Length: 185
Image 1 (cartoon, rainbow, N blue to C red):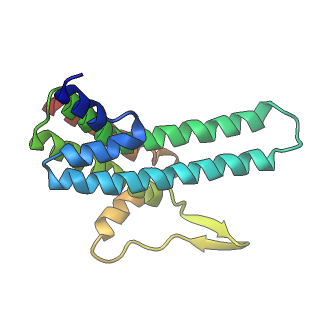
Image 2: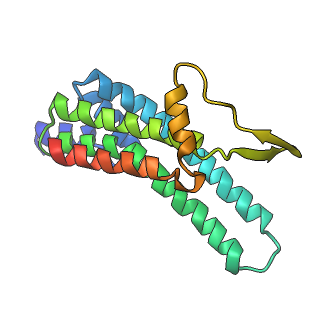
Image 3: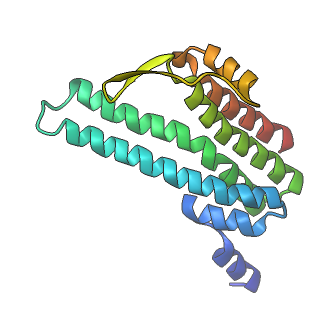
């Protein structure tokens, strides 16, 4: 085995977890390195949140009849978790793959970092847009806060979106990330 092959073997990544340090080490873009850290933390937090949601769903249906609605809800939680987390880790996986196969450019790395950050912001915007006009909290009816301050126009626009349509925001951001990848590759 040559020294170059041995170095490549020890320096390659072997999966999702090791792709993050690999992409961080090989990228020349500081913005992408920042996204590697931020995206990794968000992916970890989202993974934990959806794992806990699945565990809670399973524990609430323990002892009940197996199948039917309970099985659907558990499966739905896992699928939604997967759909939400994949666009967070995709920029890191794409950059790591590109660095390993053919070498990458800082422009490609930066573009995917921006796309990843836009997706993270879109998740927050989705949460804001999904707040119903009134909701019950601890037995008390609460109205969502009015749109005020510097971001009042953005909040007003988000409040116009029906809560059921709020997932469109991250879907559009994820599609834009895919288009950025296609454009810069």
